[in-house]
Length: 89
Image 1 (cartoon, rainbow, N blue to C red):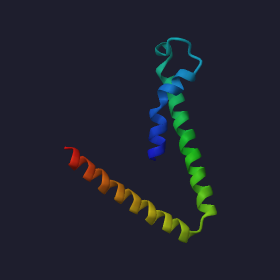
Image 2: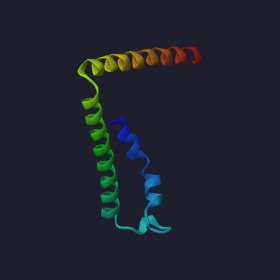
Image 3: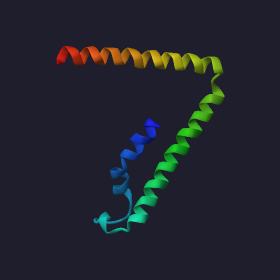
Image 4: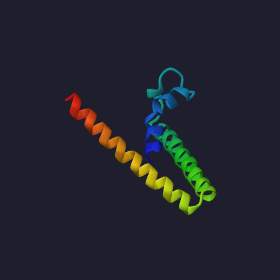
């Protein structure tokens, strides 16, 4: 979901690629919202398909190890970030 949020947050670049000319503000709001929704659905679908494909390739044991490793990495990076903030404050 975080990846999808980052993708949707880059909608300015997407809007610059659309063939609206120089004034995107002149386009009707429902059209712009539909394009944004279509873009978001495409991102979510591609991320879901990648997750399904990855789950099919890796075993349950491997996924569990990766999950524990990712949790440990996030915990360790949070500790390091907290120490960095305390030392620079």
